[in-house]
Image: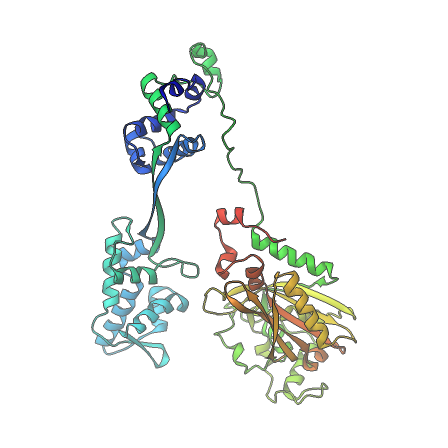
Length: 525
């Protein structure tokens, strides 16, 4: 910029500068480029004030970014701070097992839970890490026996916690073995009680643009007479408005983003599913989240010795343990069907049905429990019903699995219903609700349907993923509940449907609290 052009910069540009902008421009005039942290140090401004003024100056094209470095910082979580004082779970478990062995006994999972006041799920991670290190083994009855006098992992973790307790530090500067330990014990979804958290910290440096150099020179040489942004009663009273001009508005600046209310993308997806099904003529059915084994499993012709009823798949309610008495005639007819087939033409499972066990309470593990209740409530024939049910199953959390999930469950009753009707409906659901481009079916087995099928759709990143199962309900399911016509049923995982529809690659991101992601996530419908 020539001296003539520089001198043509009018008073308007200088008088519109905010005092924070003046401070940053003055500092950049003497030392440029400069980092955001150095600007805060030199000007005495808060980091938030520096960040705000940088945004304004960038919008006016007075400054520009010269470099941007992303560094990872590792720090302790509240759990980690507690561990720094009382020792990590690994340390307490290994030391407890060692002390018990020295005293001629073995530490048990039960006594460990009582001592630490934790659930088995809280201890599975650290015990698994010690077992993988081969410093601890699990014996009969859940006994824990140390196999080595010391645990290298426990010692290394304790050293790291003690070091990081002094304050956040660089993740990348640490050796490979330390980074591996940090990764193993870092907070993430499903692992909230870990000692470490790793955050990305962006370091930017800024310099003046050509226009900015001229403006900064004017600021330094002629100074900026501070104006006022608002004409307040105080300014009118003391008369300072006579010697101070109002600060001009810069209408070229982008207005601040309005953080308006917006539905969570997954909530919008669930509403879309409901609207679509209602539009197809389905009626919504509802049922409780805490359900008896009778409606959750027995009515679905799942024998009481079936492995899926084991604690590894189902969450049992601790208190109260049992529901009220199951109404007649359903309990008698379902029990008889399990014993010898009743009047269904089946031979049943051939075991003594336990009516007390049928009353045991669980968290609903499948949406089909809602269908069972609907079938027993004299549904319309022909009729179409659906539910959006929250279900719970014990599972290892990963990109496609979660311990709690939404399932869309549906039934269609009618004399003309066939398996071909079911396949057509499943294809329609996949394309309309999951926005799937490719669909395929695979033969399947479920205790309560015959024939049975699995629905698979292609995810752009994860490949083929299973959405759920479906089939024609067996007479052993429908007849004891008073329904004599064919019934098709399906249970599809809405979480995985949403992953395809919303272009999400990790099921854990469906429930994200990342406001920036929620605000900007495009909706396909």
